[in-house]
Image (tube, rainbow, N blue to C red; front, side, top):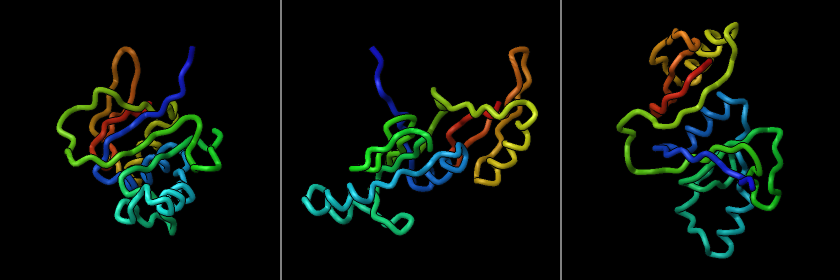
Length: 149
């Protein structure tokens, strides 16, 4: 048996994180405007639980990015494949991630990719050369660690 899944990341500013990770991974930011409008109409969501994002209604505390080749539920705008959901939490990040993403750029593109990500708002934490390989450990705009290999 297999299961569908999504990676959920806590965030101080989910929309900014979605912008960063969509650009970093070449993913698309999900457009849930039709769902938000429908839920507002039913009274299931309050206006103060929404924001204007890219000229459309969005959930204030949740937003996701998805792989551009994966299918989308036309009713909700939610991806049906590889996704990262960013959810607003009040807590600040306090320690090292126990789970992180690896971006596989390849040895010939690693430095250029790290530079591109810095331009998007990431920062380099360290460059690692070990017997098992080489990578650049970076932090996204909210401090979540990830590697560029």
